[in-house]
Amino acid sequence: MLPENRKKIRMVYIAGPIDGISREAAQNWRTEAYDTLAQMGIVSAVPGLEKTKMKSGQIVRLDENMIHSADAILVNLTYLANPPTKWMGTGTLVELGMGLAYRKLIIAFTEGGELDENFLFLRGTYDHYFSSMKEALEKIREINEPYV
Image 1 (tube, rainbow, N blue to C red):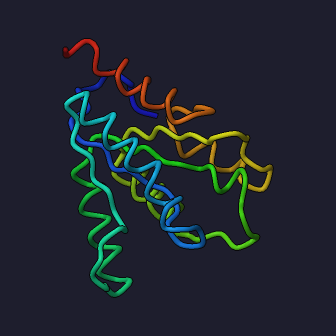
Image 2: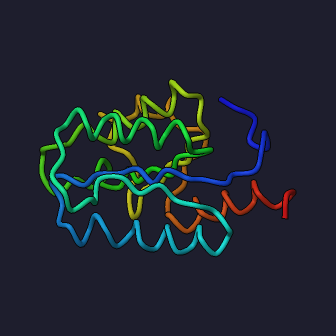
């Protein structure tokens, strides 16, 4: 775990599922997070919504570069708490692993649920966990307050 006030958060990588859910579900929360972070003067890296087709290796390298450049990761774990199907994509887990490898501040949230006991191992991957995106974004604002 990193000290939460180690530096100002200037860029946030927005992580969460894209596969296995509707495009609208994948985009709506990202748009809200992007807009809220922009109001705080924070740049967002929003992976996975490109309109061009990329090979999986290219996507992983692109995501890794964005994570490496970011100061923090905002990760939506809602679909692990309330999965629409039994299928779970691994992209979000890979993003968490990269964030840990690069020692990024990781702020996780779920909307309307808690993580299923099968995913409790994820508790060791994030620095902060909240029951809504609004609370998670407020934590980012709080971390940046000394710098405003």
